[in-house]
Image (cartoon, rainbow, N blue to C red; front, top):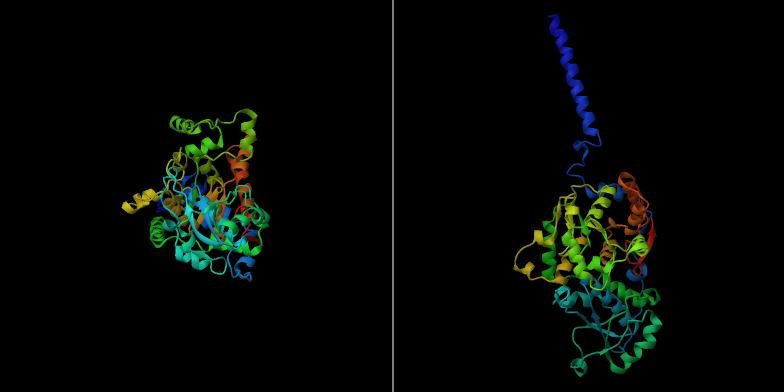
Length: 439
């Protein structure tokens, strides 16, 4: 009888010990039990939970301001000729609308470049809803689908705007050609000074960029199909590490595969990589694209869980992708989720439109670069009130690694730098149409 009383406490003590030991192991940082659960929501990550001090929101003078009435008579017709990828062409169009309003011109539907380099044949009407575009710009600028009979058979006179930046440049140099020929085509300068435009011209630009460009019904249907197929919640990642981009950057990388090195060398041509001190300074200025492996490291520093659903908003040809997918295993692309002849027949602009649509509707958006798509997506997300947007800071990454920071120390420095960017709303939107709002 006594032996039974002795065994019972011993069994109880053993059981409690096992429970405590299991709890300690479970809570240990090095234990697989400490990993973030599968239902971890993107919004719960530290980088997003930091309290923001400042946000960019659409300026009131654009959305609520009293518009300057359009003049009774137009000075002529302007067609905006757009070149490059979809988002570069979109930027050209936005600037062109502002210029056309500045010069009191009627806007003709824009011309999108047909480019073999971009594997592109789709025009403006293949991507965007024309009737919606015209309707949304009423009161801001007049837009026509067709030209009057007397000039419909003529090609527009090409006017070079590569060095035109502000209001008086266009008024003094472009307006005379518009008045003389009545029909001209322009491509606005890349270094546009929109801040020098009067508010009525800026308002037309902003309205065109953020309110008037809606995808065609067919393309929007396909975009929604893609959006529905992505596991939720998800982060859209715009990753840029293609051979031509790396070659253009003139940056040198160590540890890449032989295949990647050969692809970069083939794309370089006469553009040789920088060496020595020049290479160091160039990289310290944030000019070198992040590799997929570096991207994965920074995402971990920002406490983005490894089981996060990631939509890779990128074209074909990303090198060293396993550097990302070996860490973040739930990565999907449009080609992995869509099939059918309609998708196979898509080219550069229409495929880029899918990435754009998904990115402006994602739970979070992370960009490894600061290109035209990133600027447009960030601005549209701010327009829609979606602020979980971050640009990975290549400059800080280069600075910290050049200082010899590694491992946990490097991660902590990266987390603080990016959290500061997020709190201050840096890079959230284009300042021309958005005003900072202190929270």
